[in-house]
Length: 423
Image (tube, rainbow, N blue to C red; front, side):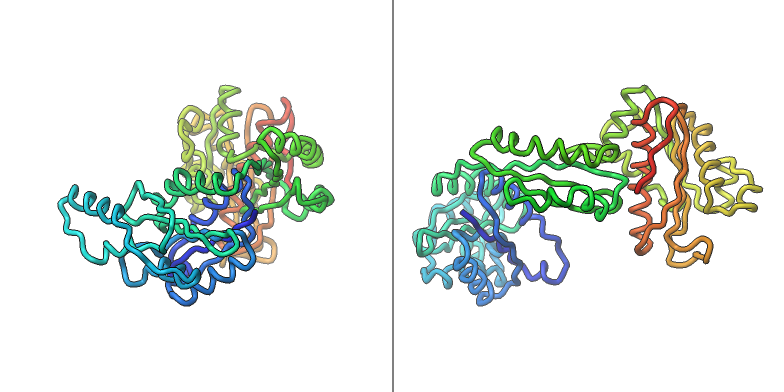
């Protein structure tokens, strides 16, 4: 069985709000073996919402909407679904009484527009809202199909989906299939290089299916399998995962939701080491990534953001002759910054960044996007020059991820080795 998801709200089309509901719904449907064939966004327009629902029902066994169930004049999802299905709206009195109790509890008057939230397509199965006033519902459509409508407020939608709708769908369709996803997290290789190494696996078939998802400086390889049980799906994934890891050896840093910062902290804790950063072009972003992880203070001791040349000299002890001879953006300066941070903060390991983030400041010899990384540790040191495309934000974001990858590579190598260089 396949469904389509429709997110309702003009603010989505204007880019004023990021839709987090659709991926949440899709993920939870996949967990119970329900395929999502397409996703859509439509504004607060009754005719267009109705048309989107009708067209989706021509292709899919069901439609799930999110948004447009509130009390305001532009909350039109119920009306539009009723139009698409040819059903009248009827007031669901238990939902009215529940809203009255909520308003009374907080000592607020309930207006008539709140009552309209209980006007649902005739014959619908009501989905109680545990975190708000607007109920959801599941309405039957011709041919055994359905339309399920959920609130747009994420906290309300998520609880209703998991606690109310998913059990309804499993009962309705007897879905006992499972879609299991294994995410292999890769650093130091670009998307095109990963495709070159595992491309033939990507095109083998639909089950299991592989996909690449690139981020700023990292890339995920996703392996998805559908089977009757989690164990059966995992068994299908196993051999392919093993082959992917073989082809990407030396660049797979984790699985699932693990971040580079998390993995680095684990490696530091295992060795009893500490980390410091000296950042110029990345402006403290490496430190921010590290301190976003709970318990980072056990291994991350601090950061020096030395942007101006004078700060590099005064705070990190970089010899002014190094900067005069080689420039602030150079291997020599990056190495001196790393040494300075390691000594000043009494850390075992230090990583330094210096570069030309742009949009100005570049030259023929040192163009915008040039970033030097340098790392120092008891087991070795290393440096790396990178040419990063994109605007200032992209250079800083990718430079940060590259620096984290550089530290990870240095930490995981054997004693005396050097950090692996990204391809």
